[in-house]
Image 1 (tube, rainbow, N blue to C red):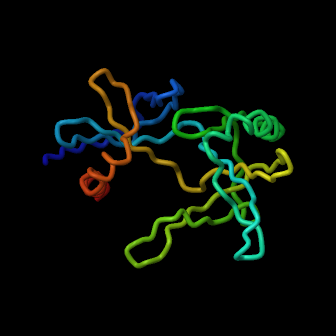
Image 2 (cartoon, one colour):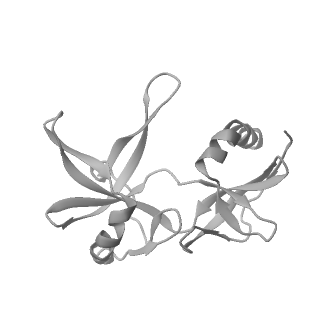
Length: 189
């Protein structure tokens, strides 16, 4: 396996497309080559957001946040968009993730929370991700929360000869994971 790295910053934007034809305009943070293919680490220009629902947790005798299924987004989208518009944010159906355009307030402790994301690290501790709450709303008597990750969302994509970007399928990402991580680590040193 060969790996040639080139650090790129402030280059031209690139559009990442999904199977539905949606796009997500990103800044190219880094490009690298693995096995003769061009890959890139991308940072979306617009702010990624996620919608979670509050569900009763019978084991914990309280409520817990649950990721909303992609199939439910279409039903929730108009309400979420209207609620975010009250905060001068425009919700968009982008490739890979929902995004908002507008100024996100600085996170404060009262509006931030940490979720376990299901994976366990090498020490047996669950991976966590910190989110900032942007808005809440109800739909069919269920409470939903729209949040943005506190840390930047970095995406790995394959770049075609024509300059188009496509997400790396999960199985290909897992196969290339160690090479991707070592390439990024080499550049950051």
